[in-house]
Image 1 (cartoon, rainbow, N blue to C red):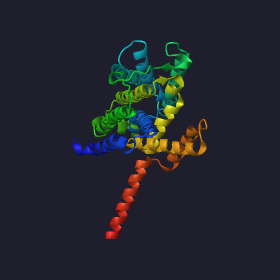
Image 2 (cartoon, rainbow, N blue to C red):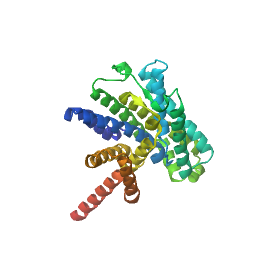
Image 3 (cartoon, rainbow, N blue to C red):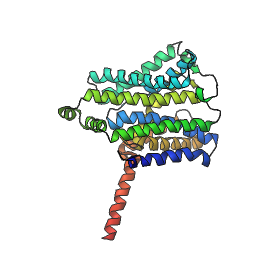
Image 4 (cartoon, rainbow, N blue to C red):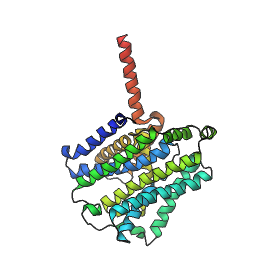
Length: 325
């Protein structure tokens, strides 16, 4: 594949890396860290929901798995954060495979699969909330231990750059998939599973690959979340907020696109902050706004913001061509 296919990713990453030189405010850096963490999880959702067409309402199950695994890896086993990050990603991928195997083998599609993923996330939340090993309702609190080997940094900028690095891996992976045979198989499954089977595609295998990769990316986001905030509980890890955010980010930005989740989550979080500045810290106001945005996106932006941009460029090109002729 030509390197030019990755030039847009390189440009975006360079801009993100350079952000701290334009604004070193801790508020801005913290906002961007959380936004990019959700963008990583949304990129995972995009692989399954956008590229494979398997809508999930419960991606918090994978996000929370990564968060709890890396926490327990350090607190209970006394092992390193970097190895915990890898184990957390692997655990999220494994949970994704298990959820997919149980669901897809049973022939679940559409709303049935979406509800099953939601049920898995809720079961994980209830079990975690009741488990003393998981900290119960009090959650888990990681001790402050600054150092590269502990994945904790005294300057927020360093953690921000780490988050950008993980995001860049996700962008490259999705870009590579979109130009691969696997990407073509995902598109075939998304458009018509029966037709894909008729073409000789192993639909179950393709969907299992998609949900495994999706679970791993979401788990990576969960690992970064707990390493930055140093705290996690069942509601934060497995609650509906994460699942709604990653789903909505992909839909608003553009389903199945490389930059859709990033564009979507940036737009959502900026909108959320703007609303909070006017309404104050009203509990649940962000979820209410997300619900409104979802309705608008479904009704008026079926291809997301990136799709709207493409339409605008095509229309502008046609208008320019007509003026020349």
